[in-house]
Amino acid sequence: MNRRRLDDVDRRILEHFSQDARMSNREVAQALGLAEGTVRSRIRRLQESKTIKIIALTNFAGLNMRDNPVMAYIGVRVDLHRIAAVAQAMAALASVRFVATMLGRYDILVITIVKDGADLVRMVNDEIMGLPGVRHAETTLAVKSLKYDYRWGRIIDN
Image (tube, rainbow, N blue to C red; front, side):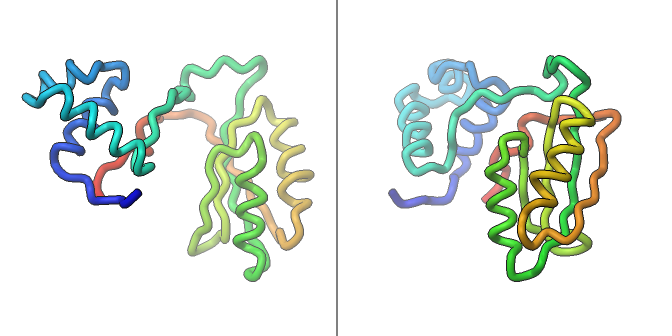
């Protein structure tokens, strides 16, 4: 299906759902002065075109892991010809929440939330450093979360 640019109506609908995804199409339509069918068909079109995906998100602040959950940022330097393959391998790791290739100090940035420090050490030493082409991994721990906006992945502009 063709992807098309979001128009103002799409953005306004998505803004309402990003505030409270449990709102009914009728409630959004009333708030925006639209027909309920308009909201329903636009949401369906956005889903079918894979522009949006409606899912439940876990708020990191509300996690209740047994031990002391650890959020870590891992900067990884990799042999240049292996960056894409290593990034894909890291993205497949169960505890990894975010992977991006970077320009600058690191070739790849990984964000993970693990159950404790021992789990982080095992992950970095065994899973990341064990990948062919990985030269260095530098781990930085998040010690106090001042802001975590679970909506950060929403579409703002295109």
